[in-house]
Image (cartoon, rainbow, N blue to C red):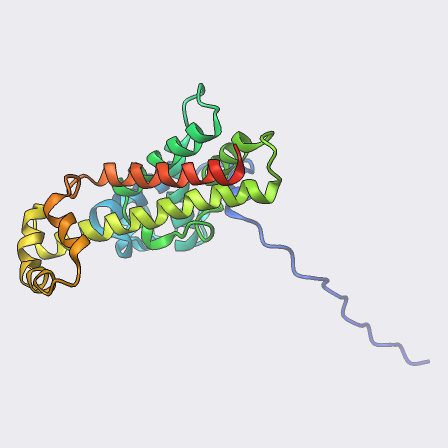
Length: 251
């Protein structure tokens, strides 16, 4: 009787991918280097702050840390993981004071701190959006949890609570993106003050205003007193958003 040929065993489905955060919470392997996730994040942040986000590569990271090019791969699988690690590190400062619990104070304080963080690290705008991409880090989710929990018990359902938090986040992202773009333009053109910017755009602005088609904008140019006060504009817009939420949601 002929022997039946053995059939290869079914390897089964591919294992589910493991997130960066799950890997980092596992017991650390026996140390071969002095690297830690915190040191890796700090090095990446230094590079991005001084040289721009495009300079952040695994090879450049290794040079900054003074290690072999492959050493950091024991913690991060590539640039995407590295950017997540950097994002989580800078957003550690989002935590509000323990005595802040009113929903409006929590969301307002978080928005102001978010602005400060992005202005210190403007590369965040290039790699983030209000709701997705680099938002899935422990410190970003913790900030979202604090914001949501401050709304809990006020009579809103969970979808409305998330809509409120998302609306504030979208305002912050849009306003700070515009502010960063303003500073980037000045840097690229070598302008040191807003007067330099106004001088550069004076011919275009003079022509447009002389047409007489934009009387309200013309009045702002002459009478506005907060043109060079981005924090005032940010807070005024933020308070308007929060006022609208309070009125719409009845909270």
